Image (tube, rainbow, N blue to C red; front, side, top):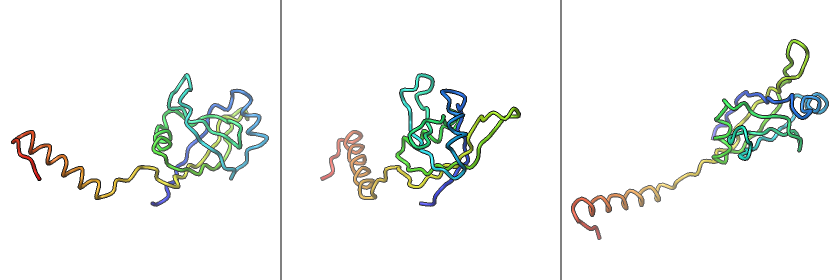
Length: 134
């Protein structure tokens, strides 16, 4: 599978001292970890972002493909590409790149597809015409 890389951002830095941690510890090129947070009271599809073991924020909710990709079992590399400040110099986001390393979608073998089709065909013949295949 061809690797696919997408730019994204980490938001929510203003909570729980995250911006201070990011400013002290996070550097361009650092690897981050993303994981689903299904018990999040605001968004059951929330994707939390960690630097080492420290939560630094979340993927924006509108980036639904990230949660979907995690749910499908894809493996990812997440790398810091920059830090974003507002006009007052406050750290407001971390620019990242998410690379999908391995597609986790389950593959169905061609033999399984043929077997399923035969089964459906047999059911159809039986239900329509009372015909049974041997």
